[in-house]
Length: 480
Ligand code: SF4
Ligand code: ZN
Image 1 (cartoon, rainbow, N blue to C red):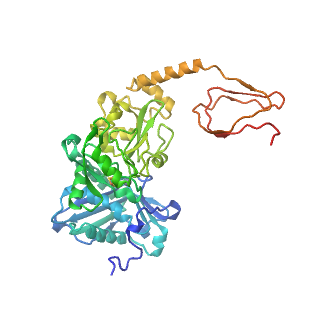
Image 2: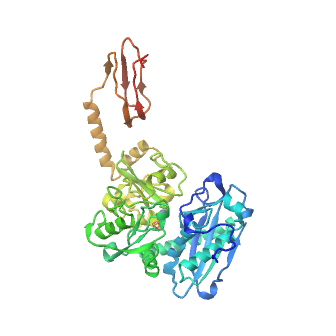
Image 3: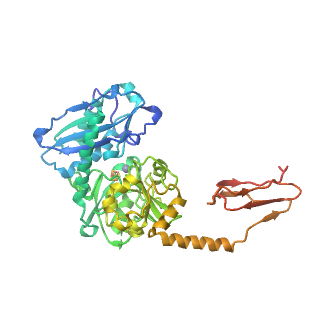
């Protein structure tokens, strides 16, 4: 008899990686439109956990209006002889994995960033209460992590209560992250890996070190170690460091070997402290994205909760598509926010000296980590919304990248002087090649394109324009 006998929907690892699109969803819980949401696991004494209990505080699934997005919290209490608080983060991260086993429930992200959608199809099949979800979680957790002897699950949809508990949850996440601060990469012989996200990003491997939290921000080195020890066959495993190949970029032979093996040969080198050349891969659940801004030779950072467009003109969601999927994409890197507090934060790329822009909320959140002399030199959306603004701001504040910007400007000026204004008069008959994928970076205001005259040829003058042309074909007027 299946453990899920009598359930209206199927529960199987086969559903991992499933997507529920907006048009197919019954409701959305958490996600980008909602400010207050979280999931939290706490280890409790045996007598404080009522095994098998599923509680719903606030409206249950069928009482939520179809098509809406709602504040949401999942609170799980576990107990067991072998359990201690070190394992809370690890158990909590599995909520993502096991929820995705449930047909028609999509779970993304972690901690205070969760984003869940429930499919209409599953509701039609009979998924009419959160209690099915809770029961499925309890069964899955207890069978996959047998050291959990008792478990109870509470779903909260009451917005006031979520808000209140949210603050408590943030404190607990912070305490977890703080435990590993101070421990150095040089001081341990073992890093740890995680492949939990391979169901969504098949070549992604997280390398977690004392000074580099996972990009989801949910697993510290201590968490990953605890997980690998208690469940050696699970998604977390030790990575012997091997030889230190580059202390600045953060390259170890052991990490390269394990990543190559676990990514099935797709990724063979990883720099743990850089976003260039061989950056760490990104799956999709990064807390923030670091993006390179070539015009100022600096790095911007945008967190998932930021609702506007970043200074490069792109919203988080667009950059997420560029960053994620398990590929190494130079110039884009998914990061855990706690990494910004690390000594090894972009160690190879200049660290904080290279950070030029981030949303105000994020800047406030990591204020303690920013060197005080740089704090006012890093722009937010209030200081700069375009690259031009940003350039001016950085020059005015004399940010560490300012000298590089001046150099680049000088070089550009010199180049412009050297180039004569090109005026090309072409005589008939015209034979112009087609131009593949030409994407110059020039502003749009000054295009002069006089009409083509078959008798006199034509003249094109492009001065300081910004156009994007994927293909330009010029044919003789009246020609075939
Ligand atoms: Fe594991 Fe990395 Fe995914 Fe976090 S982002 S769950 S550490 S693979
Ligand atoms: Zn992920």
